[in-house]
Image (cartoon, rainbow, N blue to C red; front, side, top):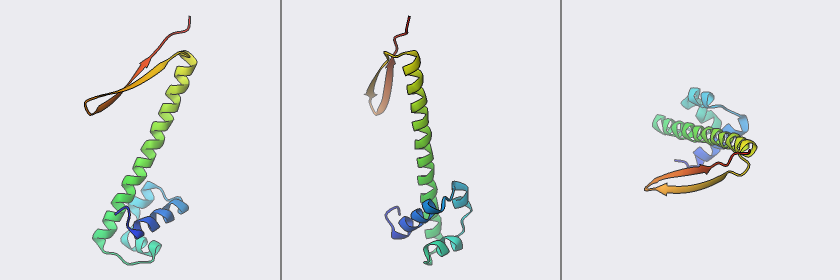
Length: 104
């Protein structure tokens, strides 16, 4: 679905228009058809909408994760300037260990 020309076109229109997740949730089949100037079945429109919403949520989640990462980094640099981070994996689960050394 994500490689379909109508999905790509609708994504571009949504990004240019600044449509929010709520706007996409409220979008009807008829509105989607008007935006892409092409008719589609109800099932296709629902699948298109579902993929759009998933991708928009992933984008928001990534922005939140980056903001948290930046806040943690700033805190560590301020309070533990000699901190070290190691990454590892236990089976299929990745983990991070943060080594702290306080300032006296």
